[in-house]
Structure formats: structure tokens, C-alpha cells
Image (cartoon, rainbow, N blue to C red; front, side, top):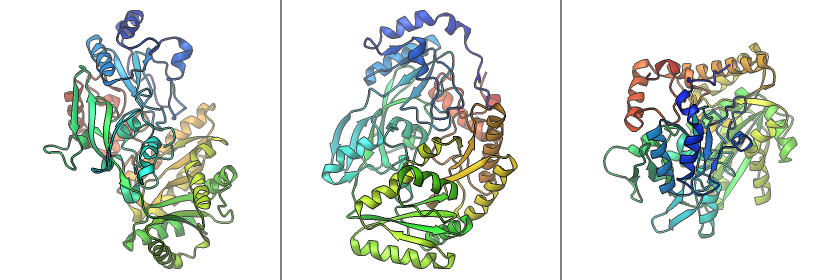
Length: 477
């Protein structure tokens, strides 16, 4: 089982807990520091619920200046800081340490400015993903990244993990949709990178910070791209008698040059659980299901759906159904967007996040089944098939230590398989605690040493989310 102690707690910090909490309370408004046991318990874990650790305290600033004061105080006093958005991380990215504070940005959730002419929005980092789209929807715009947790997840977490979502196949992940950031460093300095321009001069620091998992600084504001909504969009359900046929069909669609807005995959266990929850009308007599959505004018939509069905014909699809109304489309996507929650109703699960080349999709799906069977665990596959971002959900009982251990080993083998076939450890969930010790599967020691040097430039004392991403054996002493 992953060792959540991870780092020996700083006894000096623990001994000074009361003094530090008094100091933090002087920096932020009353009620913004949570130090009692019941209050701290809300921050002891994230969506990777198998692990938990009570933090020293939680601090909820409401402005960039307050974040600056808190980070400067922590830097001067050697207090570790775990930045947190909504706690929806599936890799343990927001798990605290015993001698750390959790710095939550949930109070920083406002839209600062919308520039429809430049097609940008400046927002605070604690805003939920969906609220960005809601703010610009009346003018016919939207914010593209759409993780399944978009009703709850914050932009801060999206930035930390470079999140994607079902529609990233066409529109890209977070890094493709952000133009500027305001970030606070551990010494309290506030810096701005990028802005409303399409391409900032100099090094691509945005690309460096997005996906850095809160290890370089705390983002408080972002300037994001907003896009004009398509004239129309329509999903189609396509069932198959095997996961191999569905996987091969995905490869054929992408290989043809057609880029749908989304291609989502579910296998039989996932189909049944999601249908029971959402009543979306998914076919229950198939082994695998694709949700394929295209957009454009009505003529474009009809043409694309017709061409995709023709491409799929050699793979003998069954139960093809094209949405005929907005309500039907919403139901189809409700089932997919609710998938993780629906699975959670029946079992604890360990969600993987590997990426593979599309040409290896059917092969990898078969191997995942064999790996899980060998560990005597069930698996439900739900993922973004169009870009090869897999999300196998390994089902287990969290209160059974032997099953937890088997699930971890099973998950590690799945991720090692992804790397072996030419993919990588994570597509959008991040490394966090979950994949930390697997990083040497993906990178050499020299690679990781260079990455750690970059972290040290931003965070010399390794106070920002220090027990994540890099194997503990490589961490500077």
C-alpha cells in the first residue's frame, strides 16, 4: 500500500502549531483558518479516497494578496503548503501532510472580465469549470475543457493537472485553452505570465506551470480562451459485440481524417451501471459502446454521421442510434458524465489514467482484462477513446487491506503496460501520490533530476506539495 507518511514530519513545525495558527489568523479574515479537528477532517483526503491524512490547518484566502501573505509566512516559517481546488483529484494530488497547511482557493470564484472581441475571459482560479461556460453562454460562447467533474472541479485543479474531458479530442486540454496566469510564489511574490495575446514572447512558461501540480506556486487568476459555440451538435450511440471491434473502429475513424468532437468508450460493466443510474437508453445487449459526437451545420452533421457509420461498417456495429433531440443528447451525456459517480454507488474503485497510441487500443484493452483477472479484481472501462486516454476503473473493497494492495499492484501493471506500448502514465489526472513511484518507468533518473532542478528554482526549500510527482528516493534531502 502507498506509504502516505511519505516524508518524516517536521517536529519543529508540529511543536509550533498553535503559534503558527495564530500567525495565519492575522493574515486573513476571521473564519478563514480552520484548525479544529472536525473542520480539518474535510481536507484530509481528495477523490482518491483510499488514503487520508489530517493537515495542520486549512486556510481559505479570498484574494491574491491574502494568498501572498500566507505563502510568505509559510516560506519564512518552513511550513509546507498543499494547494487545493475542489478536492476532485483522482491521483491524490491534494492530499495533505501532517505538518502542512491546505491552502484552498474555493472562495476565489469570480469572473473578473470577459472580452468577447478578443475571445478571452479573466477569472479567479477557484471558479468551477462549468461556471466559466455559464458566464459566456448567453453570448454564444463556451470554455472548451470539460472533465466529467466539471460541475464541481475548479479551474485551479484543471491547471494543476492539465485536465481535459470528453471534448478535448477536438478542442485540446487545459494548456491549449489558457493564455495567461497570475501566480504567487512561496516567498509571496506575485507574478503574471502571458495575458490576452495569442502567443507570449520568450520561453513557454505557461506550458511549464500548467500541469506542475501546485509545485511551483499557487495560481490565483487565469486568462482563458472562450470559443464560439457550434451551430449544432449531435451524439450517436454505436454498440459492438467486442471491445476489440470498438477499439479498432475508433482507430479507423481517426485514421480516416475525421475528428469528431468526442469519442467515448464504455465496456459492458460500465454500460449497465451507467444505464441503471442515468436511464440514458444505452443498449444492454452489447459488449462495448461508443458515444461519438460531431458538430456543425445540420448538413455537416448529417454528412459526418453518415461517413462515420460507413467507416464503422466492417466492425459490425449493432444498436446504432443517432440522437433526435436536445433532451436525448443531454441524456446520453448525462450517462457518460455520471459514470464515475454511478460506479461509486456499487463499489470502491481505483481509476487509472494512462495514455496509449490509438493503434494499440484493442490490444491494450484485452491485456487490461487479463491483468485484472490475474489479481482477481473486476474492471469497468470508461474513457476518452479518441485520444487514447484510458480510464479503467479497478473495483475493490477499500476496507479490505488485501484488496487495496491488489488494486494498487493491478493499477501499477496497467500503467506500466501503457508506457510499454508507447504511451504514458497520465493524460489528465496528474501524477500526485498514485503514480509517483512509477515515474522511473516513464523517465530516466537524469530526466527526473532535471525536472527537480526546475522545481527547486521556483521552490528552493520544497515546501509546495513536496511529497508528490517525484519518487521519494530521488527527492533532495
